[in-house]
Image (cartoon, rainbow, N blue to C red):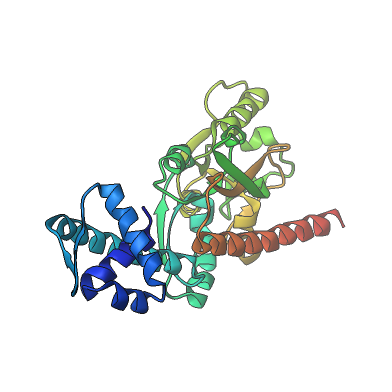
Length: 313
């Protein structure tokens, strides 16, 4: 049974005549007759009584007609909905975001997309990377933007790392550390460290630094926030040393509100990227967001490279 057959059945019922229905549908009368006969064979009941003056729908036919009209109507609504979703300027997307995107580039990307496509429906949910894998698999979110972990790379989740960002250490102005003529990582680790919530693999790396430099065997991060702005605030109000991705801190270093320390954790970088389920068709809304975020982060990466070149020179 095809949707086309139901449409033909409805036309015959409405016209009470095969000839009129075939003319309305633009098909031959024999073809329409065969279609209705096939439908009657499917239900194994007569749908019409054939009279010399036309056809009269049977009780069986009335029951089928009510269902057929609802089915054809629903199919039409589904088609219109799919057409809307496939339109580049409409659709809905739910984005899970971690601290990096929420505090830096996401608003800019969403602003550009929604300006060009005002009919889009974009919902942003602040969440931890710890919950992101489960929510992606449960389809509670379409995309996750934030820290990426290598163990996410599976048959189910696609992880695209866009920015590999050095972690820089910083303090408020007039911090006690800034009075030292020479400074090493051991001096820095004498002070509490404030930073964002980070993946376990990075936690394990930086916890080793405290023991190696100070002999103290305890977690390195004294204060953890799921917000970069809160990390900066606690550093501004205390003697904590902050640790955040370099690209997020460059504006504050340039304006002089924060001071970049001349030491860092060797080789420690944060991987920032976009994750979504594999083997699914992303709506245009999601593709727009990915495109804009990728372009913005690529510009940031270029800025980081330029900054590194200046330091070398």
